[in-house]
Image 1 (cartoon, rainbow, N blue to C red):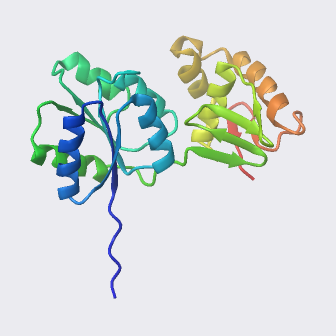
Image 2: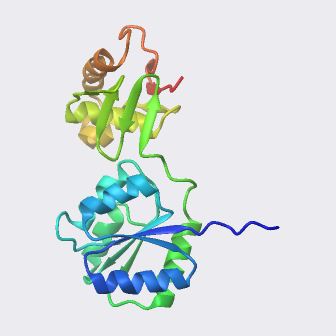
Length: 231
């Protein structure tokens, strides 16, 4: 007997009941399983818990803006995102795409175009979504909640220290160069200031490593950058 393939899951984040109802009917008819969220914060929680195959995101949400939801989601997930909005201007489209959207659809929209765009971004998806929680050794990094724990206890990191850890976690196993870190965390004019990285990495190792001077996980690639090793 041939097993029935599992349906792909789409998370719909929209505060309008009528739009959510329309999307559920449309997506269900197209063969998708649908999960709903009516606020940005609940949507982020559902994204972390459910790990959907795609997200349909409204820009105008009642608690936090859709672009902020998108930026927070992109800190830990590559899930395909289709943005819905009533604003049709080019600056708004550019802002959504720059924040990490895969595509953009203006309300009102047709069911056929919606499902076609959804199929397209799913085809372009890079693979399985990243888990929301990454564990290496006795360290747990909850990318959705922005919390780092060591042996179950929360570790207090500064904003820049957390940003460095997050960047290494997202590229774990690979070398992240000094230039890439400085560009992403301090901006393009900071590329020569490698001492920023040395100071922050020293503090991070003191908080996360058993032997900060002989780090097991947060390794230096001499003259190049840093690498996170999970084993």
